Image 1 (spheres, rainbow, N blue to C red):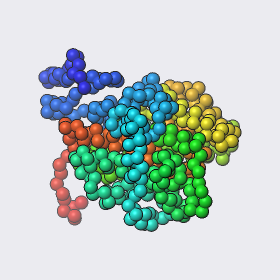
Image 2: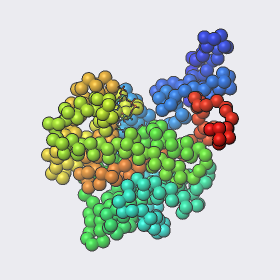
Image 3: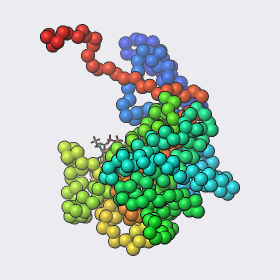
Length: 436
Ligand code: SDX
């Protein structure tokens, strides 16, 4: 980060001394005012719940321009990556900063493939869960449980440990998600196959059975792989910030990623794809496109507490570029499956059209986000609704790990410890019970 020639001067109306605060520039995007010495110099904190105006770190991994609706992974536009690369290329890019050449790609793909199996004991975790447990509850347990197995990669301050933990997590998440799914439907667990690519292997573990040969459908594999690419990283979103804060205590990478899984589960975050599809199905049940107007009225009524799930974003105040790509993938998958008349997809497009013309949404810059269409694609592929967020976690694991490793690799990093504005009781004495 580059010091700016411009300084920020903080002055107080009570005549307290002004203080100068340095400003730093990044390579692109908003400058930052460095307030690290603010408390020492003024005895005051800043106040920014939800961190709407706060940069928690400096990073070179992902950049979002919310006004333009732009998303770059290490400088490459998401549209180009989703078209010209596969998910493991994207993992290599996010982890090491560059797209792999042919040799590096072959080596990286082989390395990941060789780590797709999980310790055989992991399957006994599953038996502790009810079969109808939400897959995100299972995933939070399984990912955290990995720290009980891979002791040779739990020292987050050891670069070799960080590297092998990253590969293990990227490689094993598909296996764990497929295990959670098979367990929930009472089917036998399917082992990884080293002769299949990363995403084809995931589809095989999800949908194959021991009773017959299963050949993954190329169009669906490509669609799933694109879903992974689009969800791989997204700056300092809630779950990534959770992983950074958790990892800043020096805990092991598996525990830090488990914290990210838990945070992603929320409907305001990664759980929105499940919520968006449930919302579409409910509108469909209550009359479909004819009832969209009524539903939009409910959304605009503050007392209803109804939100248009899959719409709106803290950073994007324009169309989420991932939603555009997801809508394209929707068309491809539904056409490939002969479902182009899918009523839910038609309903989603009708809802999107109405919302994009409605003053309520236009005034608040509420556009479809990545979650609006991803549920329809996943449902068409055969993924159960309650597994959507686990798929999101599978894809986001590489982003979480890359961001965690970037933080730990920064010699200046410290344990995260925010302060507060205390508005509770001043000091007071405990009265004897008889006087309370
Ligand atoms: C993800 O951060 C990331 O990058 C996340 C993510 C990633 O890749 O990591 O992109 C993934 O989480 C995408 C977002 C998925 N969530 C949803 O689709 C849930 C629905 N969206 C909302 O909950 C909401 O839009 C948020 C949480 C996403 C963003 O909310 P903000 O930025 O805190 O905005 P806000 O809640 O202050 O809303 C501003 C206004 C409010 O109205 P007013 O009080 O100004 O009158 O817009 C309204 C809100 O009520 N609003 C919505 C709305 N989202 C915001 N109204 C109806 N439907 C919505 N979806």
